[in-house]
Image (cartoon, rainbow, N blue to C red; front, side):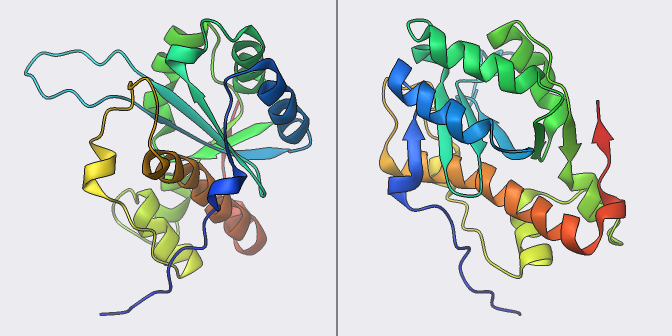
Length: 199
């Protein structure tokens, strides 16, 4: 079995919780410079039969240098953060790249009241390299980047709707979005014909 080097993710000091106007201003400055950003969401897991998810509880955006985390519970009193997130989601200039984006459209509209525009679904792009099934983020990082992205089940199934997020949650969430951006960048350099933009 092949052993890959660990994924070189964002360090903790490059991961930002956008909870104030000042943090939103910095995020806006960084995000508006980009033509493409890594995108992902997290929702509190549901364990009961028939239980409906109320997510997303967290929205993650990544640039080549930073990861920005927007907690849904903190958007109510953070108008500048909400406005920025809505602006990026519906922007046709800033392309959102990630995995499983189709399932994010409804929840994003429910959270922000805007439609998600200008996306590139990476699972299909990696599949078009010659794989039979859709490829998830962890497999894509191995295939495209030759690196291993650890995915802790404990963190995956943790409470994303909590009042505050642990350092492990923040790192996991930010690096999911960042890894998507890294996969996109690699494919854009080597196989751009595989990347399909959804308006």
